[in-house]
Length: 116
Image (cartoon, rainbow, N blue to C red; front, side, top):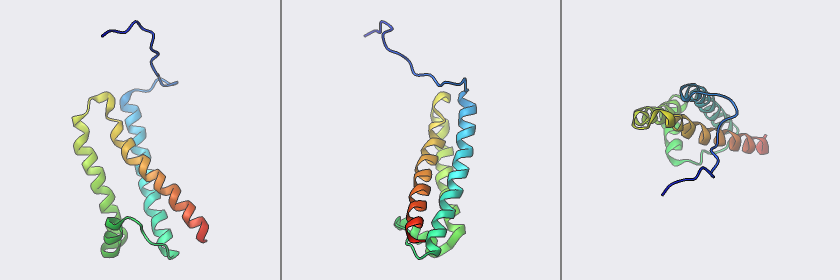
């Protein structure tokens, strides 16, 4: 099968190297991790309950530090798997961490706003 060039190719509006994109996404991971942990604990202080059973048991047993260790473990798994990807696709790893944590921050903020 071959292509006659009729298909358009998506390109970013800015010239961004894969390495620069990945660095920016790792910053996004750090910010989303911090936001998730802070909004989770803010919600807990307001009397809300963690819905993730794994995170709930870690928080109950180890508190704030345990939550960072749990998030750190996810980052370590991502870093271990990262070299398995071609260079152009390695930004998927930080994006895969940051997007769910950012969604969690948004959900946490919404739930907190309904209680406070």
